[in-house]
Length: 610
Image (cartoon, rainbow, N blue to C red):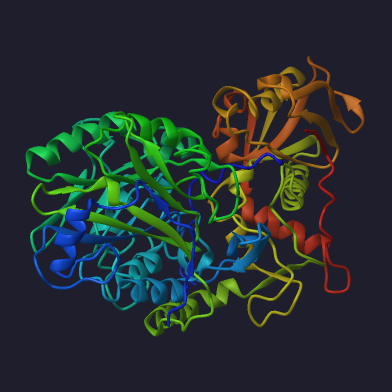
């Protein structure tokens, strides 16, 4: 298998001035256990509260609560392009097919249809609602996405690492409202902020040692109470620019959730859901893969497994995210009892529908009856008219900037794989830019998590097939990084390549995308730093000289040691260049035309042994 680039590597979001039914595909659900006790079912049915999603209005002992959830939207209001807008589905015969998915116009229709007949329904999210957003939202500091989430009737979300791309002050503005401090108001109406609470239980102000936003929130309806605790991954400072997390402390996820679970219990809230912006890696990329085979949680790995196994049994379900994967698993809690853990991929392509059976007598969730399934946000349903109006409003403002052609391509240029064609293209663009600033520039390095979408040949609007618009380039690289030049020794460069697969990156390698002329072998049959075959590293056919100096171009996030590359922070003679998107734009414009478009690079610079 190719090494999967982690989707969470972050940098500051790009800043720009102004100038943005009802069929569902149902997965195989996961059951913690078969059903409620017979007496409970009988009691529920007498009062019109069966175990399904049809609910009467009586006050029986057991009440089903519908929890709809999603994560990692990243401002994708319009349907994502290419592979970012598809999911893989396992068929009954074991084969797979891909399904086009996503787009807030369709997500709204699916969620609204799912809520029908469910008086007790709450909608929650697992973070990264904004950040690394396409131009339609990112150009306006994600105000369009907050407006869309308000209209979606989102009830609550945790923060994710991307909520800190522009710092705590900007996050507070998204929560409370107000016009942007430097760019002002984008329309004639004052931005009112999120109608839903952002939860940040483990993000503390370093001075006050208190959470910067609410740590938890309680949903209430007709005597039913469910508490939500929200956290982001403790490692957020490692994957966000230093400026974005300045003055903040990020605490352990498990300790924080356990602390506030006790506080909720003291307040009489016995039913608790944790919203955790950290996730796992299922053994299959199919969204409806059974990750409870052969046993509970056996088909998923990664950080969320240890987290789930250590969070107090007082928490009844975990809504997770961050890894952009899809899973519905039951992972044993510290008492050894199965507990539901879900993730709905990313970009609004899926949503999760979980049934929590609330026991009015105890105030707790009957964990043996929790069931859950992921559903595809298919595009074969009517578009939600209010979302269409929202997209049209912001799209009209964005069009003068976004529709400008910047280059031409002959086919889709993918970001998939250990080394991707688009990764090569961006690295080559940064090398060309570096040489325009300093002819002695030798190579360029690009982190895969900074590549947010593919370049697709099919036209996204009226520009024509093969035309790359500024909006499409923005979607690929939506961060305000600069292209920086630094000097490194050959020995330091070897160490950088080893850091791809060792230290914090050992469990989930982050393989840097490399410019033309740099080659080496990656042996995935080995472990740790040994996976980089040191004597295979060549630059323009010659081995690296450990004592020689090499001039390297990279984005400012990487140059600062981001994504677990501390050696990149040790370079000398730094030259801070222009915006990384400008570098890509210049490269596309200089090297392509309608008659001579750029072809996808071969992605053959890294030899992968598996």
